[in-house]
Image (cartoon, rainbow, N blue to C red; front, side, top):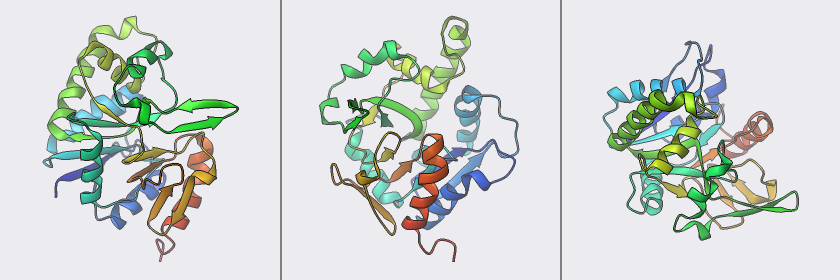
Length: 250
């Protein structure tokens, strides 16, 4: 195997990661869970410091990180790696796309000036066109060695600069700042070939069938569905899971 799936699970039990665990099992993927039963100290600790530790024993060439409480995997290893290769454009790391430059709106230009972003998905929401050209740290995939290298650089940046930034405990902020400084580099999955974040999108965007979900705007079948946001996590994800895996609990 060439791929390990990782997730942070700083919960008392496995209930919140049940959909991710079941979907990984359905796809024959190895899921490494870390943080279970450990006190949650914040995003930087969970998704930089502890992720660095979790990666120490990972021997596969590639890693796929998924937020445990709101992600479902829909593809097997070969398809996931192929999607990653199709997206990465020579870079060793790929992030899912988002419609907001969070948490630093002032860094929007860093993403808006990147080549290739004209092919992104556009969602009309509340009478505005929302452009998916920014990064979302909920799901990302890369070569294991490079992910380790990036996390080390971000942690060094965090140690030296956290007193001088507006959102020091937000891991996504450090990825944005690291990109601006040139400490890290990554591609963004503009067409949702690797991961689709469902927030701010209508149900009409999704044609769900057992084991797969096709996006009606572009016909792509994402390898991972990321149900970010309270409503999507609590309502849409359980409903989608039942439709994606109708025999999952048998």
